[in-house]
Image: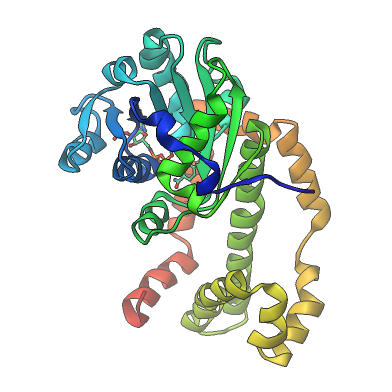
Amino acid sequence: MMEKIYRDADVDASILKDKTIAVIGYGIQGKAQAANTRDSGFRVIIGTRDPSESPSRGQASADRFESMNVVDATKKADVLLIELADPVQPAIFKRDILPNLRAGQTLCFCHGFSVLYGQVQPPKNVNTVLFVPNAPGRFVREKFLKGEGIYGCVSVDHDATGDAMKIVLAIAKAVGSTRAGVVEMTFQHETEGDNFEEQILYGGAIALMKACFNTMVENGYPPSFAYAKAIRSLRSVIDVMDEIGIEAYVSTGCSRTCEFALRTRGPRVINEDEIRKIFKETEAGVFARDWMQEFALGMPTLHRMRRTGTNSVMEKTGAQWRAEFGK
Ligand SMILES: NC(=O)c1ccc[n+]([C@@H]2O[C@H](COP(=O)([O-])OP(=O)(O)OC[C@H]3O[C@@H](n4cnc5c(N)ncnc54)[C@H](OP(=O)(O)O)[C@@H]3O)[C@@H](O)[C@H]2O)c1
């Protein structure tokens, strides 16, 4: 399938020239995207909760941004980058943003969840778009400062002004992502793809590391050895595979014993039927429903699991390991 990739030369960011861009939420992504957009020459203001409630307000002011509450930032903005934590977006949108929107503004989300599942319902007289750099905020900023960018995606869910795509591409350019390349996709694919990746890759990889550690310790291995095998050895391997490709790593970057081990036994530890089942559940909205229920109840499952996780032998070993052998 051919994908259209937008790079710097394809995008004219001057459409943002006389616009005020309000970054709503100054956290992991908001801080990075605000700094990059300002360094690209655009007018950026920050909207957060009141200083008494918001740890990030002081940081935004310390970083020399004009910062204010969300209501005032919404009124002043032409473009709003919604960089609030996803679960709090619906309440803040309803209370502070929605009543203060005016026709022709652009709401740019950094994840499609709230809009896809109807938790945030923007009015039809504003643009609803999405721009997501595919990395945590720290890397978005670090790459930008090196003159590079993070691959990302853009999407237009509703085009009220006729130039919503130009606006969202200009945002992607201002943040630095068109230096690497951005692709167009739907809110649905961005959201479900992200949720799927988190369940399968993050969830699966962590479950695998735990199973590796627990099996070795149960069989009498020194915990520090099991920990080094279960976590530390993966770190360098991932970087190499990302740089040169899986096949090049497997056939030239590791030993022949390792190649034989991973090619013949690796697939046995993965349950592809279960992966496909989780994909279908994600597409059917089952994951989103479960998560919204969990959040609405005050996250009881997560609180319980955090306690168990923190007290586990593996976590205790990890803390000792880092103290003794380095980070
Ligand atoms: N983390 C990433 O690198 C990443 C990557 C790709 C996409 N995204 C997307 O980017 C968006 C922002 O994510 P993030 O990770 O940057 O968020 P975050 O750092 O967890 O939080 C962003 C802001 O949300 C506000 N917030 C948190 N809890 C709140 C509450 N109970 N009431 C009011 N405000 C609250 C905080 O402001 P206060 O200081 O006022 O508390 C915080 O600065 C999300 O849509 C996310 O899916 C994130």
